[in-house]
Length: 91
Image (tube, rainbow, N blue to C red):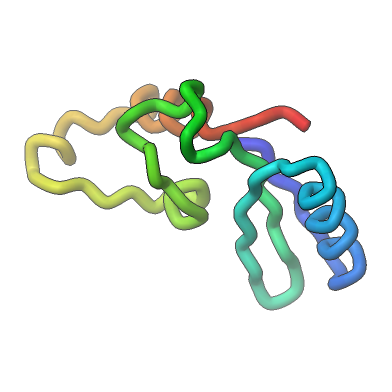
């Protein structure tokens, strides 16, 4: 996914305000000295793979929960790549 790393509060708010003005959905991950802004598809977008409808910042940052052992065994890098790609948007 596309990720914009901001290093100041002002820089982060500038990105957030721009996305609000453009009606561009995004998720945020705040860390000690940085904020990561992840522009994304709308939840209801047909572009988003059904498997990740309802995904949020945690999945976009690489944490995936699975419902059972079979799903866990079937996960591959390609599978996760395609899911994240479906959530991503170029801005």
